[in-house]
Length: 278
Length: 287
Ligand SMILES: Nc1ncnc2c1ncn2[C@@H]1O[C@H](COP(=O)(O)OP(=O)(O)OP(=O)(O)O)[C@@H](O)[C@H]1O
Ligand SMILES: Nc1ncnc2c1ncn2[C@@H]1O[C@H](COP(=O)(O)OP(=O)(O)OP(=O)(O)O)[C@@H](O)[C@H]1O
Ligand SMILES: [Mg+2]
Ligand SMILES: [Mg+2]
Picture 1 (cartoon, rainbow over the protein chains, first blue to last red):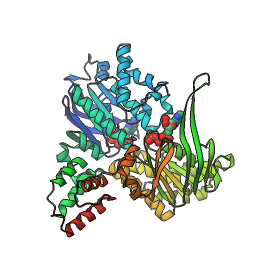
Picture 2 (spheres, chains in turn green, cyan):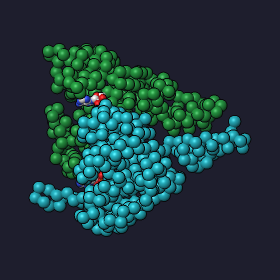
Picture 3 (tube, each protein chain N blue to C red):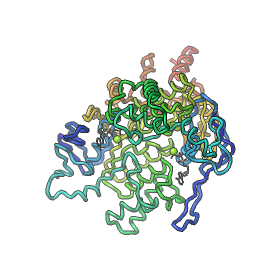
């Protein structure tokens, strides 16, 4: 499922004193199977942008094409879009509403018309992959800790097996091990099923480690759209936008300044270790 | 300032008929003493009991067994609750949920107003609080126009206007961009240093805990480690058992050390890493 945004703008509360242009003339092509990171300061428009990707929000101006078809076409089927593009919300509370964890995760697959058995298999597998213990299946989502809620919200979307998986801060609030496991799980699903993944994150480290393309948003506009290597070579520009470069990259910049001949496109501990042991 | 004495808390889930379906022991015999002016980071896996611990400090929850004292006051005595809520304020994760008023100033005034602070004193409290978090210039603006980091600082000012002795940050940086995260952590340290406010910082970002005086690690409702950042993070194998990690730069140094490189087994941060590199070079162990 390819997605094209053509000069998309989004204005909240138009014509009122609360009017806010959250997206300002965004044009993007998202081909099949890419792993994209979306970063930007708080309020830069990331959540607004991704809600356009499954039709939750419509552009105030501009157009969006899914597999070549405009969302404004008369025969465009919003329901099909929801089936193909799975969106994990930034705040899991907005996503969890059933009386138990298992019912919550089953809701999506059931709603898509999956057979009962298939839906159950998908739900159990999804809960397992996000590290939710079986003892929590009948618990109300309201009675979970913050990180447990987030895991259940992610499982609910994974269980629908979307072709495009959009995750708004999926690792926020997860413990360090959980963070790594969830992101690894997502990376594996993407590899196995060849789906598109869009990861919104405030962690420069997570984005650097997993994605192949980074889109940087700044005040509703796209400021950069490039490889991690290229984006993270713009230290000062990123800082001016409230962002940063990965911790390890910063260390290597410092080492380089002191005269060590080390690469500066190093983002992870593994890469740093390799580079220094050479 | 804060004392837990064998505190036990259980969440009990009941079905429609009121029968007990499940029990989670979220605090399991917790005893700890936090001194006035300490900066304490609380780490632990999801569901380990951190937020439950925090809610006991401002009297939102009361232990079923054992006692919790805040500023010498017993949290299980209802007569103490107002005083305790004023002494220990909380800042949460979602910057948008915490803002309620039309202007920054009104938002900060909300807490003390409910507490019955007289109007003439109010203005002074609000101004002081906004001054401390560096947002006095935004006083008449709408909170909606602020960045996430600024919104969290407004929430901090709201707590400050209550003249607290302790502020609890429950993952207050989880939804912030790198600049916002730095702002909030720096503000917490300033308040701790300049105003002697006790800080309890709950976080999943290990490097935010590096600047703390003390770290508590929680696991299944118990405090399983208690020490300085240096003590805690020099045991990477142990903290991994609790689903934690050491910060990346500390990890890198540790791995280099284990591979026989001229690096100490533990460095706290970037500065110590650079220091170690320099001394290795001076000793001729590096080119
Ligand atoms: N429902 C809404 N009504 C009015 N304004 C909104 C609404 N949702 C978002 N905004 C505003 O639109 C802008 C973009 O918000 P958005 O949530 O898309 O940013 P973001 O990049 O996701 O930020 P964060 O990193 O904090 O999640 C912000 O100024 C925000 O205040
Ligand atoms: N309202 C509630 N009702 C029942 N059980 C609860 C409730 N709130 C929390 N629990 C359970 O109590 C335990 C401790 O939860 P708590 O929220 O204190 O964890 P936490 O360490 O803050 O986790 P996180 O890092 O995910 O925020 C968890 O097992 C959780 O499922
Ligand atoms: Mg957002
Ligand atoms: Mg919590």
